[in-house]
Length: 297
Ligand code: EPU
Image (tube, rainbow, N blue to C red; front, side, top):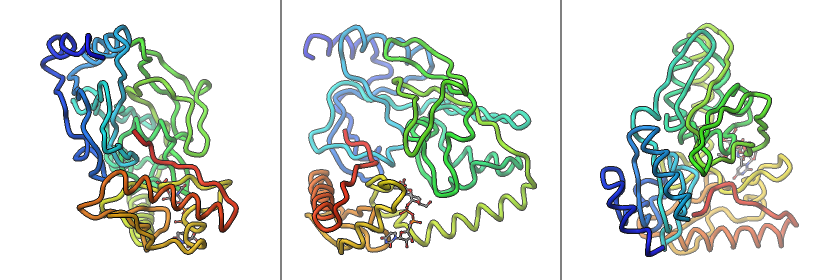
């Protein structure tokens, strides 16, 4: 990458930093640095950076809330972008239509719509991360997913072109979406009207159930594996007798076996080795191949 490094830094000096540790940006608090880390302040600045990376063949990735991500100990080459600036975080409500920026927190969007008496997203209460991350992986729970309420998305392709995707071009399935362009700039949800007090009560109940069954607040990410054919991966890992299994500072959670919790001295390598150990034991003991849900950089 040598030749493009210096100009990239000097041309985007205001928004790009070098050798930024990524661990503090992830829920696991693990992993190495990003070669370059950028926080563009406007869509135009983002587009200029994306175009430049495209032209120079520099790898570029978008960091969401870091809650579904494990960064390897070596870190990542190229540019990591965080959509932290105000223009990427706006949330607005017009009747039953809600517009949200890709960098907005899903949790903020949920609390805003519930307060406004708009129903649909409340079963997602407690899911961390940004709108962009939620749409990219069609975040959801047993009560529904983000895709079913999405009527439009605005994305930026790898060549910096901005494209509107309407409902008919959007395909969402279990933890998957057709939104595979580089950046999800924002989206629109169409929700249902409901009494805000009833809605708040329902959301609070869901939140209590979730908090009781998952190790939220530990040094962990969300579920590690996808549920194979609708069967709880956590239940399978549990049935294989793997709760409490450790590699270094990483351990299969006792509360929910599809979570890995880590000690302060854990490395990303510990988590990766534990994932492989769990996968091979579940395959050997139950004959099921588990696939990871978290992103690994
Ligand atoms: N179970 C066990 N042992 C465990 C974990 C679960 O026996 O260690 C049993 C439970 O007792 C229950 C069943 O498995 O009877 C299902 O458990 P749960 O309701 O927790 O659902 P899940 O299928 O394990 C999925 C999502 C979660 C989401 C919950 C609740 C996936 C991979 N997981 O878990 O999503 O919060 O439903 O809606 O789809 C995530 O995607 O990151 C995530 C946490």
